[in-house]
Structure formats: C-alpha cells, structure tokens
Image 1 (cartoon, rainbow, N blue to C red):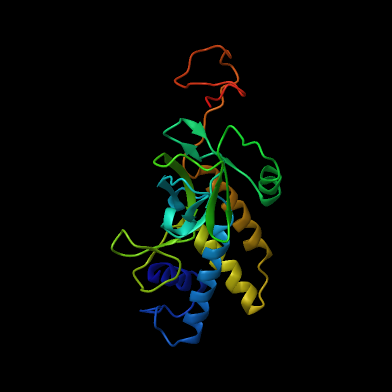
Image 2 (image 1 turned 90 degrees about the vertical axis):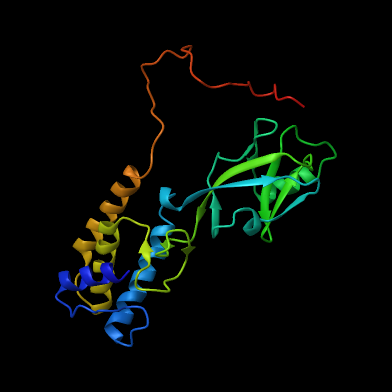
Length: 233
C-alpha cells in the first residue's frame, strides 16, 4: 500500500509520505480512503483471477449444508457461475433464485439434479443430498488485500506493507481520477482512460476458453458429454 501511495504522490506533485497506515496527515488519510474506495469498486467489476478460490464441501443429509462462510472460508463474495459440481456423482449443481426455489418446494416430486441457493447466509440444497458427497465450486473473495506474510487475505488495510491484488496501473489510474474529483479538478479524461484500462485488464486477466469455429463438431475432445435428460438417478 505504501508504495502505491508514494508513487501516486510523486506523480501528482504531492509530498511523499514515509508511512500511510496510522498516519494523522489529513491528505494521506484522504488518499488511503480513496484507495479503499478504488479497491471496493474494482471488486465489483469482474471475476478477477487473484480473487478466485476453490471451495470443497462434504455434504450432509440435510437441506442446510451450513453457512456459506464456513464452506467458502476466504472472505466469500459470490459463487462463479457454472463452476458448482458434485464430484462424487459427476453432475453439475444448479444455482437458483428464491422464485425457483419456492416453485420446487411447491411440488411433491423432486428434481433429478441437486439445486442450491444461498438464503440467510446458509447454503440450501434440494433434494436433500446424500451424506459424504464431495461438492466443489469456485468463488470470488472480497479480500482484495494480501498481508506481507503472503498467506493472509483481508478486506481492509492493516499495515503499510499490505499488497493490493489488483493491477498497479489500474489502481493508480483509479486513484488519480478519484483524487481529482475530490479536489474539484476536471477528471473526465482520466476517468475515461481508467474505464478503458479496467476493461483491458479484465479481458487479459486469467485464461479464457479457446473457441475454434473451424473445428468439426464431431472431433474428439477430452470431455464426457451426457445429454440432457439422461442424468443417472
């Protein structure tokens, strides 16, 4: 964090601080709050790979599988779509909303596949799963800061040595337009550059599936495909 603030101050011609966390300097405190604002905003922009983690869960034979925070333990924010699987039965698990959940509950028959929702902080499943199955999914963490120990993730700064997990160039550009806005300066150009930079960074973040439109549909690929309606019951 300190390095980011120092670089920003040098770029804008401000006095360069020797410490940020715990400082009583109003200017430094304002910059740190703008940095917090920047991090919280970037968190909502996309599924950053450095904030992506895998959760493994052993099912219990009840509707509630426990709190989502006890399953996805590193600052759960949201589940990545299409990543929820039952690894024991080799089937995808569908995420549904409250309307679909209540519709299912209104019928006496059960669905052939497990469906889940989060309500009141708990992960609920229908039908009640077999105990001992391994469920897995990827989730996005709200902890966008990494401690200097390299293992402790957190949502808020606690030391100058904290590492920001978003790309440096994006954070600095975001800090620039936010600071100009607070000071009443024209920030339109910086904001537009920032938005383009965020889009570019997200597009280059992590890895993407290769879509080859020239590949024949019947070409073999290392994947097992089960047609809809043929799920083992």
